[in-house]
Image (cartoon, rainbow, N blue to C red; front, top):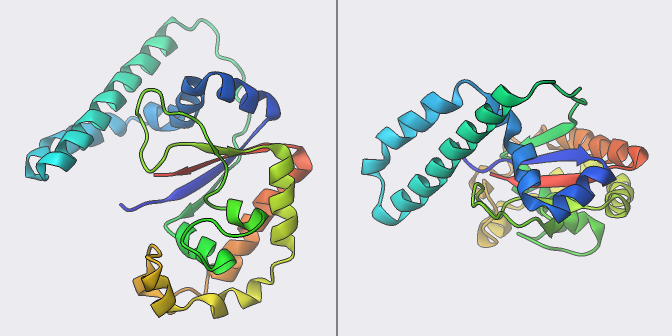
Length: 216
């Protein structure tokens, strides 16, 4: 498994609604997972293995699993009583998978934070409260449209061919960068990943969209 980062473009109207009603943000974010027919069997399998987990971690997993069961049943109930299916707009998502922390490190030289808009590109943004406790690793965060534009402009000034030279295994290990033990070999895909990442921000900026960010 491991921690993976995902970004999604949302409209300013959606962002305003999510800020006012945080629960709707998490319902929206989890919708595809809750509709996945494999989720139920996965949760059952996870429940069956909980006895082997350390007590503290087991309690945490049990709590999250229980909430996911509840959310899954709640969503299925809503779908049964819904008379009309609203037209679904195409959701624009971009996954950095497990490469998110190395990309942040390559852009900023830090484990978190940094200077200017580049610090927000991967792990920045304002927090949306997780009122039901259905997420992990900090929950959802967001960037407003002006901040998305600022990030896109900052990314446009980065030379992708210089990113690999910024991967210092010893420095990354000292700063506890996720996957630091894999550096620098095996990261030839980083420039291409960055270009796709930059294009996603450019598209969001051109469309006037905000950005949701999640690590899970």
